[in-house]
Amino acid sequence: MIQYKTICFANQKGGVGKTTSAVNIAACMARAGKKVLLVDSDPQGNATSGIGINKRAAGATVYDLIIGRSKAAQAVQKTAYKGLFIIPSSINLVGAEIELVDENRREFRLKDSIAEIKDDFDYIILDCPPSLGLITINALTAADAVVVPLLCEYYSLEGLSQLTMTIKRVKQLFNPQLELLGVLINMYDGRLNLTIQVLEEIKKYFADKIFKTPIPRNVKISEAPSFGMPIIDYDKHSKGAAAYASIAREIMDRCEK
Picture 1 (cartoon, rainbow, N blue to C red):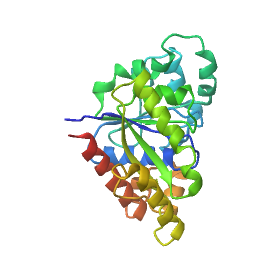
Picture 2: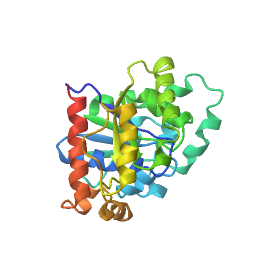
Picture 3: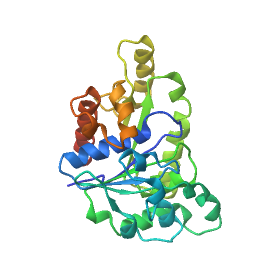
Picture 4: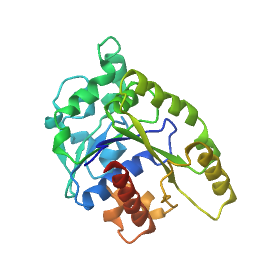
């Protein structure tokens, strides 16, 4: 039984590998035989382009769902990868917070939209923008669990307490079932003293939540999005592909209890 079906990748800090992780873990889950929906909730649309979808010709997007212009079923698109589907994003999502400022239940727009298709998928992966605004609140409200990607750098620790408080607040106000599924360490290099020091600091707060497999610094992971491909398809023999496959398995193990 899948206990946590909808998983949100969130961190208000940019450049921590949030979108890269969401795309690659979704792709690895699909490769493992799951039917997976990737929901690109970031106005930048990097998850959309990262799996080869043209953002300018994407059709209905997350923006259309949130403002009530489209049903989720109409926005779901197939990708080139078996078992992997996407609801794309668009730059219009930037204005959604202003448009919804006076709307009732504005924090539930995404949750209400995807509820009608939730049973059609084994997993739904939500990629959030690097902020704690209304779009991220919508994703957290819609999610069953949160994965927090972090770098082994001191700057990535900044704002972590704010993110933790936001998750706790969303749990209190909008989504009592929301859980922190785990902390994902990105761009890991065990040869650096700084990496070891920061990891020890992270363990003080999230000792039991850190995923066992860190994602290494790997040039293939950085190259893959420019080809519109997940790492598992761009170079399945790379260290990055092996790490993401392992993380995907670990996430599924934690979700399927």
